[in-house]
Amino acid sequence: MNIRLAQIFCPMLMAISPHFAEAASPESADPQQVDANFAYQGEYTGLIPGDGDKQKLGVQVIALGKGRFEAVGYFGGLPGDGWNREKPLRAQGEIKDGEVEFRTDDGLAKLRNEEIAVYDAEGNQVGTLKKILRESPTSGQKPPAGAVVLFDGSPDSLQNWQGGRMTDDGLLMEGTTSKRTFGDHTVHLEFRLAYQPEDRGQGRSNSGIYLQGRYEVQILDSFGLEGKDNECGGIYSVKAPDVNMCFPPLSWQTFDIEFQAAKYSDDGKLTANPRMTVRHNGVVVHDKVELPGERCTTAAPVKSGPESGPVFLQNHGCPLRYRNIWVVER
Image (tube, rainbow, N blue to C red):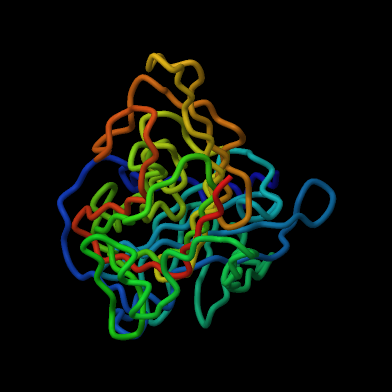
């Protein structure tokens, strides 16, 4: 690791807290209704000096509202795209004369026109990172033959949901439960986080998908965060994701979840715990994780038991959007 470049992205203030917070404003579920800070937020990659050679650096820039930002640097590349798993480097910045500056005594990074120029302590530019827009490899994936299509954007598919609400442009809204129930199954879900730059932690685009109405895979704007069990892709109160694959808010993201239901004997005794494999934006973040059969995750609407259960999309007071939801029963 290049020490001077590491110092450019060293911590300056506290990072976003993962704890509960009250929702503030502004918030938007519509990419056409955002503030000026939104254009700076996102993912950037490029080459910088390393130990004897160039190395790839990925940076996630998080909008914090009122012209403030946090940059999170990943050596080797972005999560899911080369990151070497070293502890990310964090720095705070703010807009000055149309640029977002991330400054320390040891260097400077300037974000302007979808590029980050990186400078060393002597003021020499040592690298340029360009903005990229990643897309999940399973985004828009068509349901296979025999799949149960729960939502495809048509008015008819809204009838598959209890209390289902749909936007004028054909997107499913948060806070609904599938009328159909499932045992062993795989579910494909596409979701779009709201943009809430002034909110923090659990107040920042919070929702969740509950398998069988019992086990929650968290949905949250945890772009750039550590990746805990109560953050995006985590199995709530059970296990953190192996890597935080959360994209920036207002980007379409995917979950592909394989769920193996708990097994019970004829007399109702639990004989095998449920298991889950989760792919977040195409990357495996949980592999055959055993879940607690004797309990459900927090706020589950369905109690543990041998019966099949629904797909439940939590309403946590944040405006999320969903599309292309289908299930393959096994």
